[in-house]
Length: 456
Image (tube, rainbow, N blue to C red; front, top):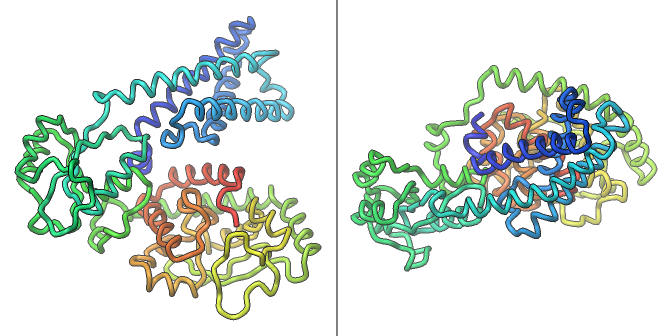
């Protein structure tokens, strides 16, 4: 459950919980209006199934990303898209399982109720959550680049109810990176500011704390009930990634996380085996058709085999359906490019739908890879990235995956800077690794595949 404690906000969970009740209530009300209340209650599993289906469609339309859905117009469009997707999904499910049918006209009424009820509830929620009395008032100790980064993230992410009060000048040697009028004072003013500004949380954003940390003032604040935390911690909570620039070896060694028990590894391996077998059977027709398409589209082998770096730096052979011409790479390896002209016609479709990744199920069965983990990189690039990016080799502490936290949160990487950004997400995943976290990533992966995000 660590991932929920760290990354999912109470505001987001509240919205999800309330809309679960709202959708279920809409189904019950619609059944009552159509005189089928007793039948709906006797088939309660249908109510649960339709509610889950609606929630999933809302989730895939980003209705639970409160940072992305701000404007009322955007909310209305996403509600319409979500309910429309749920209607199509329910129609398809009913065609396969007629017993799922709620009754003539009931779901149409549910759609109407949701199109009215969800926007009204969200508008009311937005008005309630923007009330300053319901937000945590945050004071940042520090005025350098790290303090500015944290403040920017707090402003950008609406999922968390934080309101920035201002900054405390630590008197350090770092240049001022925040606006001068946002600096409320120095360390001697902390107690006064806590009282006058009603501060609920203090974030310590000091790159160098030696001689600059107002220890006594912070201790008194904590004993008085004010939450005191490090900038790295709140940055992780807001963004779902680690602040690599401020990461030190001691931070990796002594931090809460980066512990994967033998039981977790064993259960994760069992999950990989079961899922790989099931997906292999279900996707066998798609793999056969893909293999035929690759053969007909361009000369060369159907499968593309390439060395990749796996767990603990061990090199293994990764298999994919070939999506490029056979002369795509001559000599020194190069990064993939946006709209890469080396990709074949069938290759573009495969990359968009991720069909080229299906042969990696064999790597999962062999134990080279997991379903979820950092994406494996080629040895040539690993050597370069290890020299350019601190702690890069730490991503090899777990098995690489078919998908991962970096893949669902960041675009396709094609440079050292992209690799640096993805490392932030990979280290966050390793730090908070759990089976529940893996399941959320798999759900997000389906969303990425359906939307075609991140394909090259």
